[in-house]
Image (cartoon, rainbow, N blue to C red; front, side, top):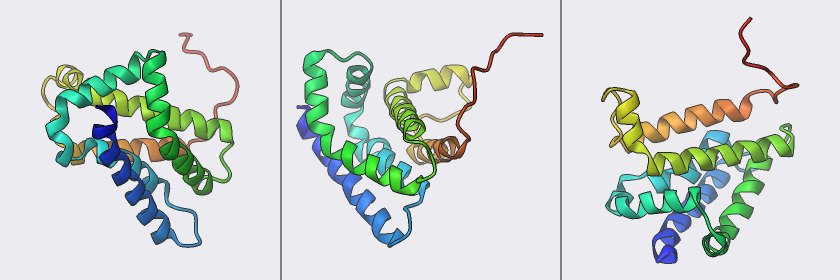
Length: 162
């Protein structure tokens, strides 16, 4: 079941990644294009009919067992290798560790967005429209592009009041 649902999404991701890289030519691909290529197929309205599966997928991502992890690793091996390489080319001056943290946070935000849009209605008192997939995508792209460009943290900042 996972392969039937994820296969088309991953093929679309790879097609968008290839288009982004082709457009960049010899230059590094733009980080916004990579983020969009990774997220758009998951959030697009063409996959809205998969709402139940998307919620299940989000839950599986958040609560994996050994069997789920084995399936995930099989389904996402090519996605991981292609996108990690593209992120490295896009951000050659960002330490690898910071890039991996950023990708980890991107995946987490995607999973939360997939499985927890009802929270947005609650925290915004209905102001934000969780059905507007293009607006969600644009916000995620802008947020994560800024995050990837942010300087690496120094030391251990504290939240204690003075």
